[in-house]
Length: 123
Ligand code: TYC
Image 1 (cartoon, protein in one colour):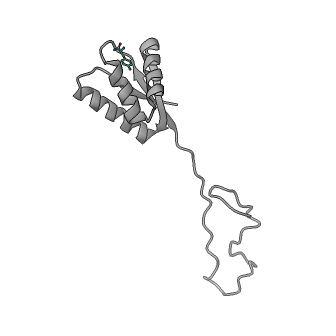
Image 2 (cartoon, rainbow, N blue to C red; image 1 turned 90 degrees about the vertical axis):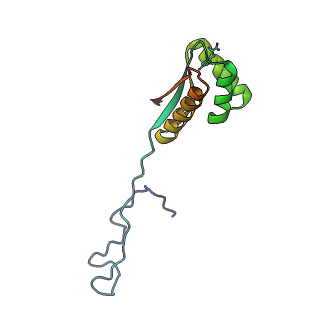
Image 3 (cartoon, rainbow, N blue to C red; image 1 turned 30 degrees about the vertical axis):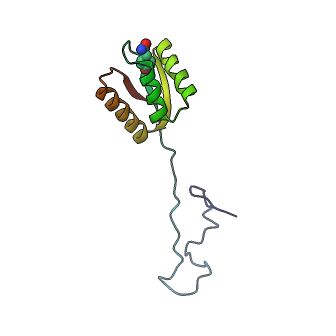
């Protein structure tokens, strides 16, 4: 049987160095047993883009291609969605990755003097 991290082990079956665990090498020589490891899935965060009246459409498409790995068609679709509805999702990531992407987008928009706004929201 193959065990994966996080699997529960029946304590009656685990070798714990008890009175008769089959280890006859004397005190202090028991088999070391790793404590059970419970691995939690990380929380996920949406990176959200907001519409404005001034940022050029081509700039938004370029941002979606460069930082969110979208194809030109996908990027155009998301940009048009934001343009028409006011808000849209660029992608869903763990906190640090989402935060990094928001910073990268906001920095580039500032450098080009566009008012583009990007933020993150718990998914
Ligand atoms: N509304 C902008 C325009 O007409 C385009 C735009 C789309 C801006 C999406 C921001 O997140 C945005 N030039």
